[in-house]
Image (cartoon, rainbow, N blue to C red; front, top):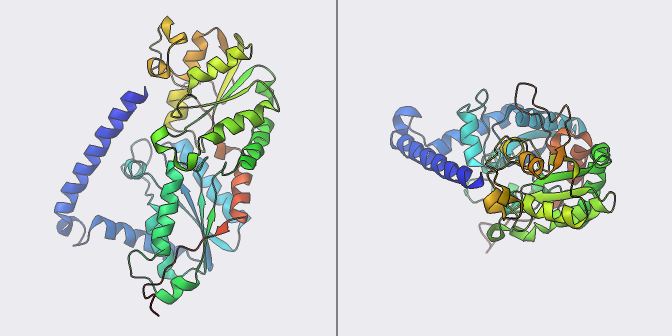
Length: 369
């Protein structure tokens, strides 16, 4: 499943790149003589200028999605942030260029424009907000979080060289950390998840599917948070397990092995996404109908079992999948819920924003002065 998706993503990237090359070759005709990057910046500048009501601003940075359910979760989160921070303007950014392009093309929903953090930060500097908070909406401080950090570094160092140097020396720049930035955060999340999923864990094994990073991209060694979360959850109820789609040795195959080691060889199973939104991974890798099952997959590696969703995989292993109104296909796509669809999880993110840390990426363009 993942190999196929990877090849599709590569193909999509090649198509997008080709499209941009073609577009950039006649920018003068299509964009009034400006590049796409300049056009994007102008669009974000206009949005920020027209929406500026305060001297402080919060930028929520998510990986992105093309699912309407995810858009609804993001929109509700922005709305809740505005209520929690009445003296701040609040905007949303995507860090994934692929998600941005697919959303702009209206792949699954009506067309929507999202932009990378660099455009928003540049726009904030142009209207000169006194305080800028960038809140990472990632679950762990992994590869995607590093993109957020790098965008803030570029802004803090005035990489475009066009912002007022005196302003850059004075602006307060803060960072709100991901959901599980520390081990204590994993414990906090475990309590929130138990409040939401206790009724399932009391019936049988409750499995959370996170994303994770491949070993080569395990930035900040963040994958350990999934293990720490499982430990914290099992201290509450031994029916909880946490796996991923990308973390080595923590795929659904290893989750099943741990269940067997704990004596859970049959009974009810409930699967839930451990991702901020319910997108492709949640609907396909976890709750999808992909099912190229072979009996040997019960003891083989994730590579052999990747074309079987979590739902189908555990169904083949003598477990009964717990049905739920948020899980059952009622003629449309199965409605599984991302973390941002739970109020107590949104509150954790909001608390991270309230305790955002001041960062100083600024270096004077004229150090001799």
